[in-house]
Amino acid sequence: MGKREYKYDKVLCRKFGKHIAKLRKEAEITQEELAFRSNISPSYMSAIERGITDTTITTAKRIAKALNEDLKELFNF
Image (cartoon, rainbow, N blue to C red):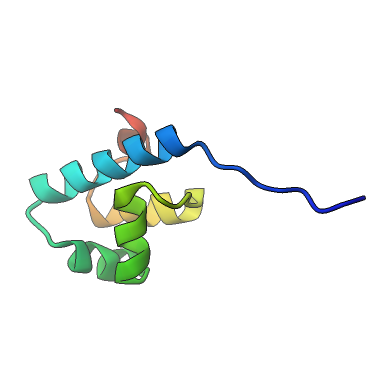
């Protein structure tokens, strides 16, 4: 068996990232603060918000907790 190439849904990632940024701004916290609260690097948080990377459910759960939101709200866009 050969290697499988993983392709992510760019449109979904962009929408997810924009929604995270919107929720973060509504919570009046910086990107760096959200990254710290989510225990991820600021550069990774930036990539998520810009929609240039996919993320895991575990990371999404940590972001939701840091924003005091239900996980499902992160996907309500």
